[in-house]
Amino acid sequence: MAVDTGRPVARAADTKSVRGPGRHDGKNPGRLRRSLSTHWYAWCMVAPVVLVIGVIVGYPLVRGVYLSTTNANEANVERHIGVNHIPATYESVGLDNYTAILSDSVFWDRLGWTVVWTVSCVALSFALGLALATMLNRKLAGRSYYRMALILPWAVPAFVSVFTWRLLFNEKKGILNQLLAGGGIDAIPWLNDPTWAKLSVITVNVWLGVPFMLVAMLGGLQSIPGELYEAAEMDGANAWQRFRHITLPGLRTVSSTVVLISAIWTFNMFPVIFLLTRGGPGDATEILVTYAYRLSFVVSPRDFSGSAAWGVLILLLLSFFAVIYRRALRKQGEVW
Image (cartoon, rainbow, N blue to C red):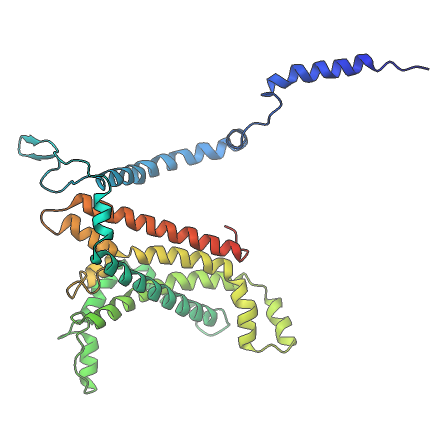
């Protein structure tokens, strides 16, 4: 018995030809369109937040980039004096501000100290936070009390902590020098000597940063299965070997994230430097953000374009660091 297959094939071809144009010539919709159609509710919920962030962050960022390409300062910006309106007279200068900054030794000196300051604070905070988290992850009497006491610096506003440390570092009436005087040791100029001032600001920032590291590391430690430690101990691994081969790999995801966040925070840590030493003595402890603030709010005439250019360079440096750091983590198998 013969079977006629001609008409079904023709019908299928006709159907395909009819449906094809309706589906954009057989092409699948783009990734953005699929995401909008699938996750429309999430997009609606996120949209207000994105709009607010765009207004609060996006506009100042665009405005700062624009000002960095002008010669705007206190004398030529738009301003109102009583009922009189003085229009802006600043002009575009292209990349002259960036050229002047990068060719000046002031930028490189501030950048060098900022890098030292950031690396020192992050390294010490991470080491102390990990050590304290490891101790508090064990069963010991009063563990909850110790956790609350160590997290307390994080709960206190930063400016209150800095002012308290400033009283402690007072050269004549500070508690630290009084304790040293009781032991027959001369007073130390904590905030009046460049070296001691740098050590002082690092100490204060580490004291403020340890609670964050402690909480993050403690959460990471509690996520590591205890069976791994028991199996390693049964195999004869000592405490250092268990820490090296179980604890550190188990904390890699958490530690990589907190190190990046802490580095960005410390790089831009304005309150500690400004409130404790105001960049002094001289300019020994001044970092990039405090110098940008000085240009815009302290010196006269205030250099708005120069301050904006410094801010853009800081943003570019942090973005470059984040990209390099992320690529390094991806090579190690950490994808985020």
